[in-house]
Length: 399
Ligand SMILES: [Zn+2]
Ligand SMILES: [Zn+2]
Image 1 (cartoon, rainbow, N blue to C red):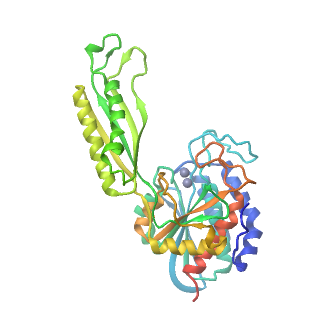
Image 2: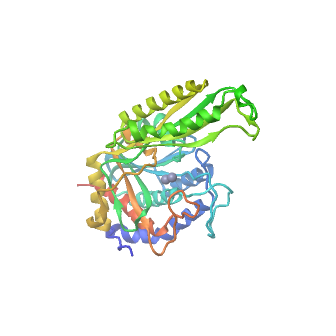
């Protein structure tokens, strides 16, 4: 059973009054999920609501579907950025909900519907009072799930147009109970690279293997050998997860293919580990292919950097969270997550923090992130909006 949140009394009643509306926005977004860079409906709703709230500036079309709203406070001061992600995942929902996905094969299974709705509610409440110095930029980004929408927004000049002195992210975390936060200093989400390796040989009849060069067999050896990289090359004191998740050879039982393609990911926290992993994978691919008389064509792509929270902002975030749930419910020591998070691109551009908000409760049946039975817990809305408002109080206070 979750603690009651100790939201500042100035905010608590206002959040409570808006809760059912925020929840209804969330459920509408859940019913209409859109994958990365195609969040056109979501983005239009976000922009329309920001205008309706009287937000001073609304920038649209950044990174295709990204939206930034800027809310000026009553007094001059710096600008801070609060970020939500809007995209859904290409997977089939298994929930039987009145607001289940209406789009086959697309689902909000990471709670970005909740993140978007909570930041919209925050924008409405901030625009009503404007009781802060400076400005708040509410940043709604596309394509967090692999597309790197945050990178595109930064590349398109997000922080040139909106000069945020700091930027803050929040993710619901169903592995932790509602009424907790986890604010880690240092690594919090892994860096991720992708690789595709094509083994080129000589196709042949499956009954006459001696007439060809077997690319499936070479690729199978490579899959096995790649596991020696985290096992034998990377220091046991460092972290790396390397996995081959794709394997494509022939389409027929009786045809040995000209080429076989494998693909996978490298996950890490330390840049030196990444360099070592890439070098070893290249060396193994070339060496094994050559040993079989084949050739390897390697496409190794650096994707998301690791999300590393600076210590000072992690302390600030923990203090704010502690004001809501009590310091004893703020986790400061936890294993980082080996999933990626493109908020890392924003953290590389500006100081800030990425915090996990506990969202599991007995009253809410929810699967894990990216599971077909996942559903954002609307009871977390008060914690999320409460956190954002308290963060603005703290960072842009009149003091
Ligand atoms: Zn996700
Ligand atoms: Zn997510």
